[in-house]
Image (cartoon, rainbow, N blue to C red; front, side, top):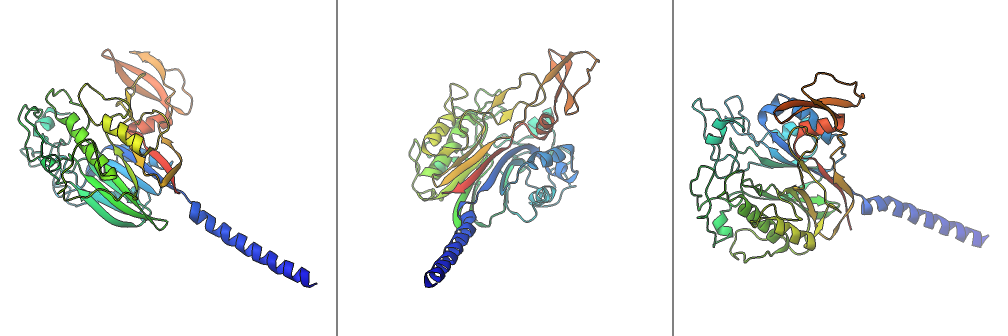
Length: 408
């Protein structure tokens, strides 16, 4: 009888310990999802008018149950930008949270340098059509953009934000005292200022508290490693330098000497971090015979972990066509203490069904297919694509990246 009582008591202790371990297991092994999305030119007008693009963006992001969301190309709203109709300051991120039903999330949102030096039209407003000749003549020739803070970066987080380091006014010459800009010129053929900033947008380090551990969310949207028809463009070299800064910030070193008196310090060696954004170049090979940030990304991939396991694409040329140009420009890089258990790029299949050119006949489409048009040799052509692909293309020329993390 005594033996039975002791056995029963031990059994209850074992059950209690098992229940305790089961209760603690989800805390020790729980995961969280990070999404990065470069939304094309999401400005104040589109947000306040709840435009068609905003509706598509909501549906695209609605497929994710995310805990952290990184956004590129969001206008940081400023008074009288682009016109007197807009008078708020920094409220666009709140509008996005409302649209996405994430009002409880904390946020990080600072104005980018993009468009800082853009000029107003004669009526006092800024140009809003980036493809117009007027916009190109009035646009910021140093940091691009046609109105101030046009291409800003935003972060939304379910986790508490403990600290923020935001860099926008770091002079390029401070980061690289040997900088020589004489071989370069802007799109109008004029010399570049020696006082120009390193970042055409900005650089942000937001420290999040996740499961009792600090995780640095590094946000960066670099300048494109592309010249846009300007043979003297500094873009490729500036892309290289911006990614050198990222490499130095994450690791404490890069392929050239960095001044020891910078007002910023790199991360501590044991820091947990996730660096993400549109880095505007491919890591497998350089986009031209000039040096650019591709070489830096290749080094980062050897040193740290990338979210992807094989080459993929996150950017696709605008519009609908049978053979769009596809590039890998967006990245999620993370430190060794983090583990990705799942991830990918949300680019749905188009199942492109060509209907031909200059023809009005349309065979009956399946219910999940939508008709689109494209130009070929000056002719208007039509095709069917899937509804999911249509919505993704109407949202942006980039596709969302996502990764589900665990802390080891």
